[in-house]
Image 1 (tube, rainbow, N blue to C red):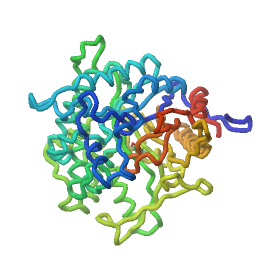
Image 2 (tube, rainbow, N blue to C red; image 1 turned 30 degrees about the vertical axis):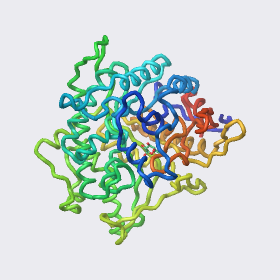
Image 3 (cartoon, rainbow, N blue to C red; image 1 turned 60 degrees about the vertical axis):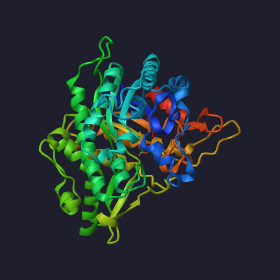
Image 4 (cartoon, rainbow, N blue to C red; image 1 turned 45 degrees about the vertical axis):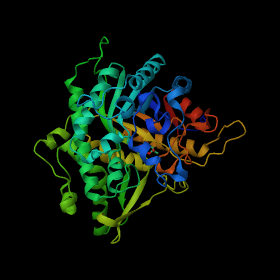
Length: 468
Ligand code: FCB
């Protein structure tokens, strides 16, 4: 879909083009086949937590339409599909131990077994996230991510997934955006909906420990799956939300505010994982709110990763604000001239992707990076057939891919890119109104209709190139 006047930017051979979803946002069937309750089931069933009272009870009904959805991915030519496992489908009570308190739900695990088989048959690589926010409610009753035992619960669950699916999964991620998970304890916007700053930082530390414990379990290998070659064929990493943050001015207070914001949202994960330490300035600032770190914790967090997953949506300017809460700061979105904003009010600043990759790559110490999410909610207007000519989304994606290509040209080792999202879905506390999909979902009929952006993206994949 480019004209001869356009510059064609070719991506490296084997570049992994994909699209992403997550379990709670698309699967539905929230209590089918022995699935347990997750904190998102509880949260969305609690009055007033989610816009319009929307829930993920049905979502895109992907649990029952999985085969057709993989067929759609094949038609679009996707090379990879990023999805998450619902912990509560596999371990309804969250745990395999102690005996009698939980155990594996075979039907739930079978769903993912069939999904990875379908993907393999379609020639689509599986990129599996273990934790995309839907912690078992039974574990939340025991403190959830605030409880130090969560590292062990998570490693036990990860082992079940590795053993069953590990022979066919190309990429594993431990957590998706643990900063957002932790803000469900500290900031209350998302499940479990607690607003206790110290709890938020305890969750941060336990998420880092759980990540390390799952990595150890992965490296220990060993398969009980009985499949030939079963076990741990793929690579493992973590997915962090790494947006571009800039000081709003050259003033010292804005510079420090921006450092605090970066430490708080990004370095609290990047540093323990890649350096085995927490950002000191932030820990000092937090004082008694900082998490307790016990001997051995930091070694656990700093296991060697195979790749870093980076979710990237926007750029923000950070300024000092004396009324700006615990961290005394405020953030405003940046939009490149003429780019406007997305439906959620997020600024659009494609060059922030290149700048952010340049910041993160040295921290990631030479391991490959994947852009695991990038995309936008736009005001989609379907015609009578449900088709959406979403040229705004095409423009957003195209401009970001151009910046990504520049990053690769500059020597940054980016191996793949995943659009958020394959299809419209449940956008957490916003409910169903914001639409991020390449494919339109009519929620009254569950009909899927590829948008203009899906067609455009298919061509990008086919050409392994984007026109500038
Ligand atoms: C990310 C989430 C993803 C989706 C997008 C829009 O923060 O990982 O589930 O909601 O934002």
